[in-house]
Length: 179
Image (tube, rainbow, N blue to C red; front, side, top):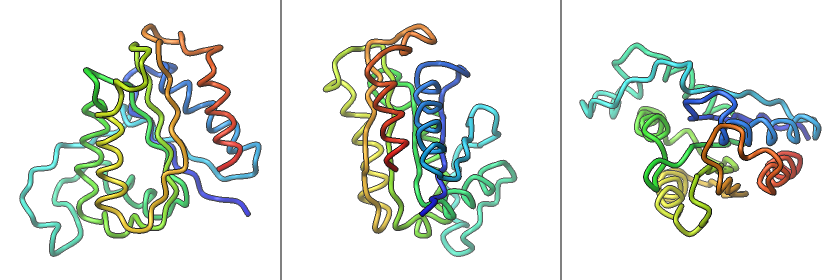
């Protein structure tokens, strides 16, 4: 059965390491017959959450930016892939901002499969635990019925493209194929 797969790439570098891993995941997911959409967050205008609380009762944000469209896609997806480069051992600000802005409809992002892609110059996977804890805090503690299906660690890659030929590329493809 075909699934709707939404890939959220927080890389600021198109064809950067986390973005290349997204593309491999997408390749596998499409070959498996899934419907896939990639949102390159850097192409979108997403404001910071203001903490005003209006969305608690209206379930709509007062800000006029691209987040409402992204939230619609997150709610309608079966599978969500969240990919980020690692900055100082945490997800980058673009991804954190996206997570913060899910508040108006986060209760509707339920019963989804999640994959995480983490790309880092550091070659020690253990040093990525803070970023992973951030993703898990969102998906496991705040959302209902979610399943963590896989983590792709793109480690030891600093310059754009260094991830090519690494075991992480094959992992990304295989996880996409299996999603």
